[in-house]
Length: 385
Image (cartoon, rainbow, N blue to C red; front, side):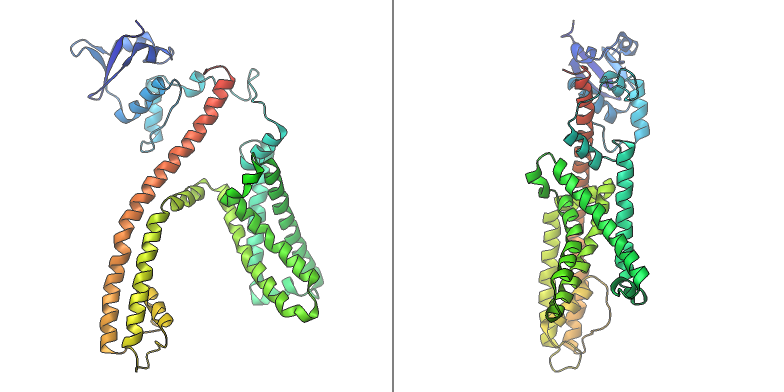
């Protein structure tokens, strides 16, 4: 009877479902007659001495007819062992074929979709992997050149055309790197599913900011005259400083860094609370110390200097460049030191808790995206309707 009630006890916890729910996957342990080996006559149910946490995901797999949500707090080895015991092979059950097999079903994509996948997924093909690798090399080279340009003994080679061979060689590398970034940016813009929402992604905006300084610097050098040399210098300085955003292009090649960025964004309210507490603390004690040190040659000539001292104190850095001289100032400083530790410690528990919660949400979202890809292949192969 497909509508018969099936009771299963997994390590003491009883689960109840319909027979037809399990028999939807007849090649698995629970969906085949092999389940009868685990019938417990005394208790009147099927008994399994297995991992209860994994079984929650396994039962949901049957109930959803093919959606498997792996628990994030269970070791992969345990997951693999439980899946093998219950004879659940996601690849076989969902009909996902080996892409190298002769009967593999190719998911049709337009040229634009293929280009987008090529640029965003290094595992799409060997060419995509090589492109991603070239992007990482370009990022490393551009950052090395940015750092080397600041070294006094090497700065002439970047700015003085008289160093003919070296200058033009380094400038050629700069052109190649920025040319690669520009081509990559334009291809992503063209292949983006909804180009008008392209800049909604922070990473796309950072890609734009990574190439903008080069062209602004180029325009400034071509259009500036001798009378505007001062303005040209300011523009060049701003452009060269803003090139540091290129380091954020690494985020595309590191899933861990992307997760951290999403988690920090999810805990923005908690970080804002911490920033507000620190700001109130700094303004309060910076002002108190300024007025308490009036008449003393201790260096507190303004409230901003007092705030600088408060920031150094609350973060427990303590440069020692400023120190109160008056008795009242030292008393205020002592209170600031103790309260600074408390102000930093109290919100940290909330931030850490929120961080863990957001990390779990982001990880589950990533897993759901992976499952969507699996189901898409399964639907294309006729395994799920």
